[in-house]
Image 1 (cartoon, rainbow, N blue to C red):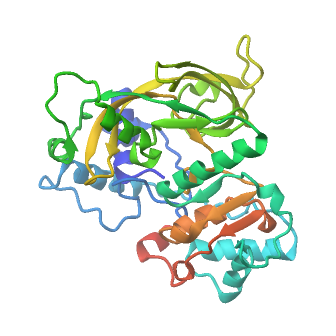
Image 2 (cartoon, rainbow, N blue to C red):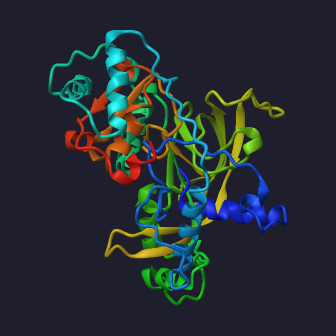
Length: 395
């Protein structure tokens, strides 16, 4: 979902592109599509329905002014088309019909006792007898979870299990790191806060000391802007691309695939470094054929970016220039990353979902009731009590 600030920036870009500043969006017709029952914008952006966006004022910050203009633009959209037909869960069984009703109630945080009982019947625990059939088909299906730290923990444990089950050698590919510069910010105040929060010691070179380098490699991706210090991979392992490498090759952020092979080199201490990772895309929108490579196999080279790393001692933040292939093992993904997916095997870990929107997002990825397995359960209170008036007025 876009934020109020995003809408203002889109309008500004169109008015500039078409040299028509007298009409919003440069006089072009705009169609917005989305689902307010799913997650609000990530980060600090204000949602289109946020009641906390103030009026346009010269005393407001630049971000506040952009949000106010964006919300005003949102209120100019007066033609609304509501799509009612469920195109994902189309099963005709009694369970599927009940599941669709539960999902519909979940959108408004108004689940009934019958809805809760239905959902709880899909909770799996290794210590309790279960009626869930065909559990084998859920092996190594990526788990949807709400927190990046949980995603990393699932990936870390399951990639070892995956390699062991296949009898494959797990290779640990290290990043090439150096001291980096702070990212530029459009806001002077934000730049000042970033400088105050980030450790940037006086140094004679940008090379890292061995102790700091080892600490950085030991960090999980959630602590390094999702740019892994060590990528543990084997052939056939499911992976998730983490940047828009080449949209014309369907190599986009969030695209799933499998490790087909790689080119790498080794340093004097035996550490491996990736040069190119070859990924076989999983059900891309269209077939991709590159010369001398199998169908739908694409090369992903190392990319260099500035990342903020949070060290475990004192929550110290350092800015690092990191060179690594932008992908992660795909044994788990977050609720934000799963939006838009339809899954015929949907394993979810919703215990830490923030609200009913997060719960609805992870539950509604299932194509049917029997395709859903819940780990650890979920917070019932977040599915009841109703949604906020500000959100309700958008339905």
